Image (spheres, protein in one colour):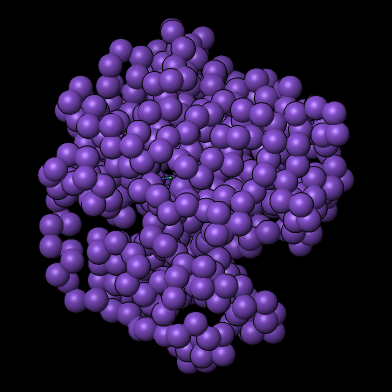
Length: 480
Ligand SMILES: *Cc1c(COP(=O)(O)O)cnc(C)c1O
């Protein structure tokens, strides 16, 4: 199994060689040369698998260069009841389906350590990184910026791992109290929380400024764990299989998924599961007010927005106007023509978008193939989220978070008769308590173990947004 870049380098790269990297050398994203296919017999066999066994089976198709026994050990170590079940202790409860009403399910993906679906992939990444670095006798310093979910998932995945340090920037005093407490209460020696005087964009600019110094980056062995990381995408493919197998009794049945989306990483994994042959009818992309993707899946026009045109919403992990994984899907949509892909995304750099609607003057007509790929979309706004959180509470007796509410709102509009619809739950409501209070007038339930998290001692440094000072800080900690 070899990996290619969407922008044309016909690299002979393997899973292990792209694991620690980000973008391909030509600026594109990695995809396998062909999607491995799953047979009817295999799918039947997988029906009896534990989550860890399923993860091993899926991963083996994409990472044949890692010995199967090692993959098995890594997935068994990652997908345990202790990590994913919040004390229930029953490993069969990893990503369980809850039936809300006949034909409508919620798949619980947020029972990991940071209470968001990102733990599903990030925990595996932590173990894969440690395994690979160990073999290479190498070390890695992860350097990134977060406004909440990604940074905490990365820290909880990498804490205590040999050969890895995490330097995570966040805007000083701008994350929710819960998210701040989650990150800053960690005491592991390899985790460095840096609160930057400024907003999230200042943090991101600082990461760019430091990473653009290639000599520094190489000497300090700087890497990232952002959502384009291929191993993260593959790890997310697993729960689409799990959701399908839990909702069906035989392989002639189809299901649809609705996915609250930001960087298109989660739903990209659904696309890959479908390309592998999993019987998925529809993949419904749910956005909030930042509806660039909804616009594309309705019209064929892709028009990114600048950060000043990106709204701060009550589903903040979806406040993204340039979805980093979208290029992977466009590559498949246009028939994997990398020269054309490069032209389209160069146009995005120059003019902010492209148009595949087939209208006179457009850049192509591939949008007419969208149904072949099963995609459709919808959006919600703040008042929709409040109404959905309330009606879900009343009708089904559960409290959902704001991102999951975006998904449920759109799923109800896009549901077809006779096809089960699975909504992916992307976070627990405790993380976004302010909006839960606004919707319901009461606090979101707190999972066991998180009761007093805000009162734990916090470990962080405050720094101004200055690249030279940041470099000195990192070098001081790594000794490199
Ligand atoms: C990251 C995140 C999303 C968006 O997922 P993408 O893979 O970026 O599309 C949605 N909801 C929550 C809670 C998240 O943390």
